[in-house]
Image (cartoon, rainbow, N blue to C red; front, side, top):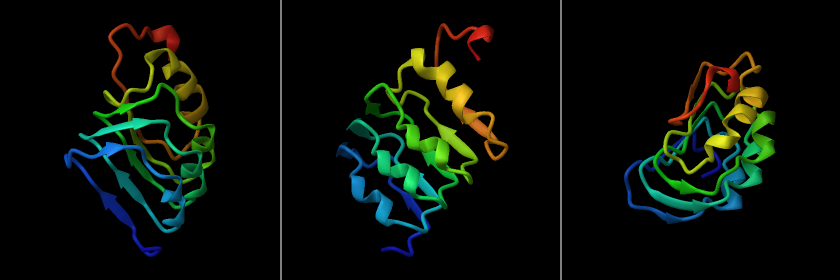
Length: 119
């Protein structure tokens, strides 16, 4: 499993949390767990997957914050947080910490009351 490059578990009715052991997938490029019922905190160990380029956690029920370790992902190009459970109050911080990275090409968020001055 350590050679796994893409993990796509979209729309599988998964419940529970993403385990800390996800960091054992040291060559993972894409982690796509959208459209499930995942909860809890995202593991801090996500920041240890230095090859990660795509993180799609949309349409889940995660707790309201992202692990600070995501800022260490120098190859990250796409992040989808649409209806992920990430608190909209946290969106300006996400933009401040992740968007200055030259590799980020797409950041998908959902927020009804996000204002231009928040970004």
